[in-house]
Figure 1 (cartoon, one colour):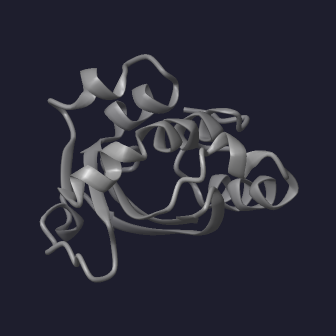
Figure 2: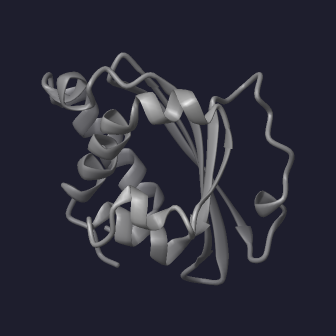
Length: 139
């Protein structure tokens, strides 16, 4: 399955429902997050709405727009989401594949919202990226 595809999202939800240990692996992560990957293959920007409560993946949805899109500049709604992470596709891919650390990616990543909440849950967020990397993905 392709990285950042609908098939990938479906598989993530399926595995999240089947893996009783996932909440512990995600370190009880609780976050309402927008992840925006820019300049994805096919000349697209892709936004993922991710809701995780106490380590349980509640929902994950995707919106696709032609790049460059308004997803890059849309106002951030703090009433609906805790954080928005915006970065190039290649940076997101490097994070998921653990080729770079969160600290090393900070110069390439824009973060909006409640940074302290995101930082206090960084272990859970990293575990979420590692969970993505367990999927049989094509890049």
